[in-house]
Length: 455
Image 1 (cartoon, rainbow, N blue to C red):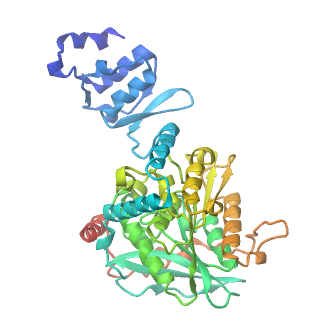
Image 2: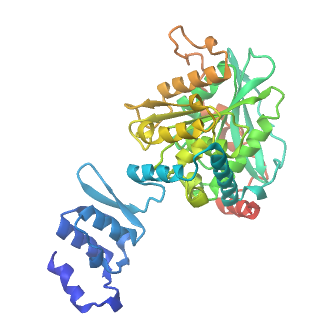
């Protein structure tokens, strides 16, 4: 340890809490352990550490963790071995901590009755934390619909729903043209991807499911690329109160779509990737109308979702603590497909997390109802092979007309999908020209309304 680190301590006592500036403490850790630590000056400005030298341990990395935790910081190690300071990542754990948490949860219930009691407590806790029972039970006005655009074997129609006074949810409905009578429904919440539901894979997914015979509904996250950005800046999406608003928006959407005469309410699915996967898991846990769930590149025992729209309201703290694997398990015994990859927090799903899901489904004798597809060489997206796995799953579970798009070797063709320009998918037209006059503007006004409804 360098002299600059040692000298100030001689004048300190326990009454002073052996206080030292965080910047000096980090230099001391570098001097003692040889750790390379990088940070912005604003991250350490005016921050002090109590009892800093008493927190030293033989291991430099553990010492750094103990020190940074006092300032709500942690460090991410890059490939070169350099540690970069960042705000404490409340939504992350180590894989080992995730497994330990699953073992803790397994100790809470050993049979179906105990599990269902736990599930009821979790669901009640989620609703209370999100304040859902205070929100309106019906949309403020009738849904607004654009003219229908017809293609070879499906159509597209945009919609907007006034889920709260002056707050609108937008999306598009894809309908098969050759299906008569009632048809299965699939909801497609989007995730945190550039261009959101307008991007290629979002359109491929929503349209191809319609070509397979489903009433396919694609809808926006609030404040993320979609038309809610006509009302709020994108920064609003990173506010905690977006989470209850998004759950309320989805509930209003489900109520409307499932009331349509062509909707088969016995066959309802939801699928999304990343933040859309979080939405799929949570809405399935909260709403029994969802009969099949396909969360993609999201479920993990050591990652809760880094956006406040996923974890900002602390639902993972309910009932003594939960995680996304237990939340996904709340689908049991409904069919559940988990799609994971090798380059994000879902990389250990087959080894760490699937045994927990199979155990929970085993309480119902429904082990065959939960399955996983692991794509170890792929990354964080809803790419072609992930969509292929989802198509096959829904085709089998719902007995769809997949043969219309499926080749002899089992590939679901997407060549019949027409990729539309972004403006074609906008419920309020290019530039928001048809945005209703009563639409609220600014997150401050929207958040004020959300908080007023929360109980």
